[in-house]
Length: 434
Image (cartoon, rainbow, N blue to C red; front, side, top):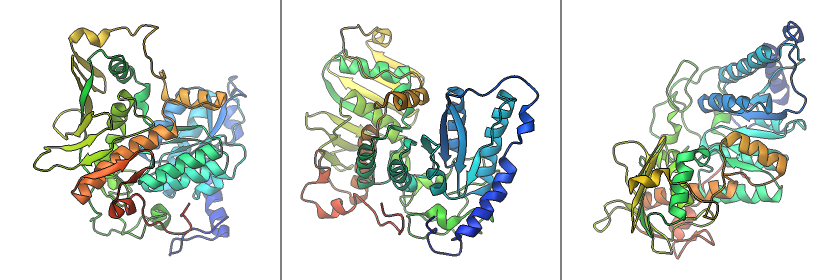
């Protein structure tokens, strides 16, 4: 096993094994626990491992277990308390559901590379902060694992393209966690747009929050069960603050997403959902805008322009985050759980068999598992996730540079703009440069 990055928190292989053994002792379920009833665990479940066991992973755990198609056999995290909580809940689930089975327990690892080395794991669920997505996904692809990775797919444009390249090279099934593509109101909105029910699309309004800010939180003592240096991973060193990595008693969502060193603000956090639906509706899953203009005297809002003339604006206004398509014959406004159309009757329009249809998924997690079995692309394939994250990152770069940016979506580079092109990537610490 390679050593962790340098620093006081780096651990030797011997100490790592000792810590893993101690942690596993608390999470393994003895076989006798399963001896009181007759139900047994099916033999055809897919073995998966979780990398990241925080707040989002706790939700994903439930969604994947609810499919009835997986067995969570391992989890990895640098925060010991969260890792133990996750494994304990997994073990209790199986103890209650399959009491006769000889389930060895959800094995825990403080280094995700140990999890990736296991040959019995078919897929990994990546639910870590954005600054880790590309490194873990690429190493997972190289380890032969199929991948479910939370959105936004990547922290930078270059990392997203590298994730696509590695997934394709190693023939991996890769689902981005843009689960709105598996929700009926968004699919209906997109099919109405694609079939011309509101005429020719003129503009799209996307309502999500704004860009990130530079990290500015004060230093706090690092919890004893958190390997802070490993949490930072590829990032340059920053001081610890519990708002970045909340403890077990903290109920809020981690604020690392607010800071450009770790996330992309609400532009990528919610934007990865709503710009994704805009891209889907405009049939731009393999492309993107050509001009991005920040607010100025001629543009009230950040404005994207596509080669076909359609514009898309980022309008962070009050109300639910959503997407508003405006056409020559009507409008469609969609948020989670609600679809509004003009004319009103369009909302319930049944799209005919001979009309245009998009990929239909009714369960984002089952769709991933089905794609694994069939070796096909899922509803939110890695290329789709990358293109959506790119739209979000382009907007953040325009906000940062405060000037229009001309983008080539085929070459994925800015036109005659060295300064902007340098910002397609970031500095990354060894050994995490992948």
